[in-house]
Length: 228
Image 1 (cartoon, rainbow, N blue to C red):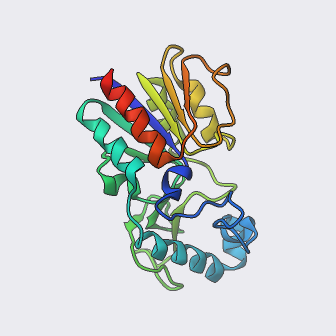
Image 2 (image 1 turned 180 degrees about the vertical axis):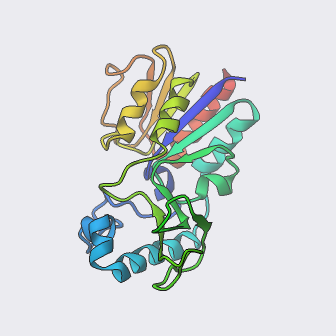
């Protein structure tokens, strides 16, 4: 069975109502990113960081997957599909995708500040005094600026074995995630779906650009792949 690897960014979830920090009215509006998404910010004001992610978590629980998420899940009927996402939401899983690598963590999980391997499913607020079994504060299971991206090697390995690569709703300008496309085998067809692509078909071999939002562009790409 051929292997499709899908790289997704904020654009795939934006049409579900998940805000993106790169938009003018985006997620980080009113906050210095280092105050709410860095170890420095956590040490400076834990309550602010917890409140910030608690609001994001509450919002996530009110939205639903969109047509792009469901179209990607449909590919599993004919292909082995691995989704590598920069998003911290669970919309791919809710739509039915079964193999999802979260590069930047998961909003609906919490982890121990004592042992990063102690990870808990967590759909409610994280409050000061919510401890792991070793009596240490819980924090969002999210990769902050200045922290390592532990899943990047798994993602690179997946891309290196892709028969087809899809890139959806991401500028591919932020590293290390932006470097993943270069792990694809040379002859691998690449579908790039973004309404404002910052790349041309001359820059990568076998590149097909679909300049549409995710909910329109992903079903187009999926239909082309399934037709083949």
